Length: 448
Image 1: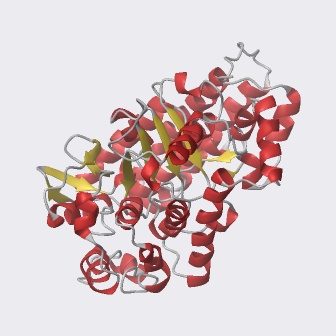
Image 2: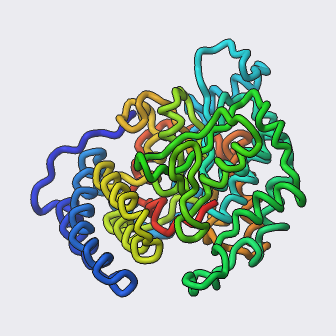
């Protein structure tokens, strides 16, 4: 069943109390970041309160919970696997299985659907989606998809997936977990001529050319088209880059998608637009896939939905915005950060919340899904690490966890099947999980 519209709440209800607390917390938290950004961060305090109040109000309008559910939602000891039950009967999963069983091929479908594979970025958390893609390939599921949408590291991983090169995922543990790729020391001295904090040239021009050469032609010829997502500073919207004319065109699109402002360099002018990192507007590009006509979408997330209280979402967005403006604050980004705040205020829901709501029956009828069946695959706690992590063992665990996340969905254990059946009997489980979620975009997006 779709989320139930809640009845209006009396002034003494927990929801109204949450709204008041969230309003105060949002303002105080953002104002606390004034030490990082001076007046710029302090200015977010008022907006923080407004966003928090709007968020709490919208949460009340999109779902209702009884007292028992409210108590469950306040627990902080649940594991991420407990929060996101596998829904084996979800239409997107059913379509993948049906196509695999039929041996369906791209361009030769017998159904009328368009199935998209969406891959989140996340810097070195790309190791997680790399492991997930490897598992999809090993299960023989690649040909079930009609298009692949990648954001930053997700787009780079997608190239090796589409070219059938398993070595791509090893880049994280063998080639870029070093200062040649990520040098945080440069972040402390950005006025010096020391090069970028994130060296995309090292990755794209050296590692992907000489160390683990990508078969660029295989990507260009792929019957499953790659759609690279970046952010346009001219239109202030996510932009989908596809129909690559050459290897160089594709390389520049990948660079644009991972071009973090001030961290990887200045905006990249390509295809007539100033382009920066996809995460500015669309870290998890499922909405790009929907706009491109997908009827079904599988989304590979690169970290679990974090555990957190109800107030967390109320001010985490504004904290993130304050930090971005304080640290990543060149003049050319001012309009983009303002646009991001406008989008946050308009949506009122985090990416995590939208994706978790997609697990409920009838969720495709919600306005932000526009009739599309979206299924998110979240990894477990092993993926809970920083985007700039260079610890090899942690990254290896991330690769393994990405593979396990896919296996939990497409090769479930008997226990998971039983849990899925229980979830079907209790269709509100995703709504309960929603209130355990820590915002999916609550830290700085340092992604390729």
